[in-house]
Image 1 (tube, rainbow, N blue to C red):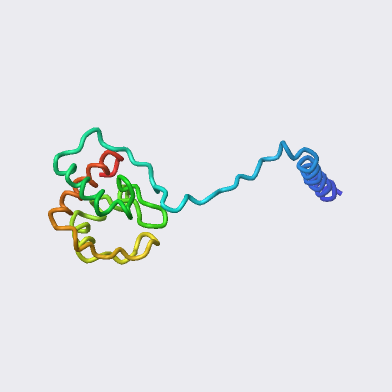
Image 2: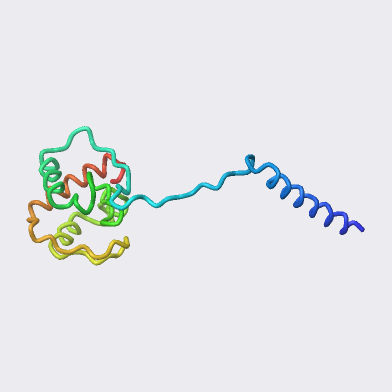
Length: 146
């Protein structure tokens, strides 16, 4: 008899809950619709340092001229185009400065993100990449990426 009482109480509780949801729908938790970020939208919020070194200032100019079309303003990434460089994946201990040199010279096969391969950037000189890397590293530090 005890099993029947427990089962009856459970059925009653479920029925009461269903009645409350049907009878008082405005009190039910609303379903939130999620929308994907817009194509071309920044992928991360970037905090800029108060000031950039002279090398990083030159790097920002070079980045804006060559890299920002894909990697977004301030290297925040660009949804549907290229990943953010202001991201833990690109911290110096995982992607050292030479990785940026090699990426610009040879391109990169997609391995962390699903944007496809990055083509080589023959118009970017080794000196440009050194400056661009200085810029990226200073912005990374301002965002807690060391």
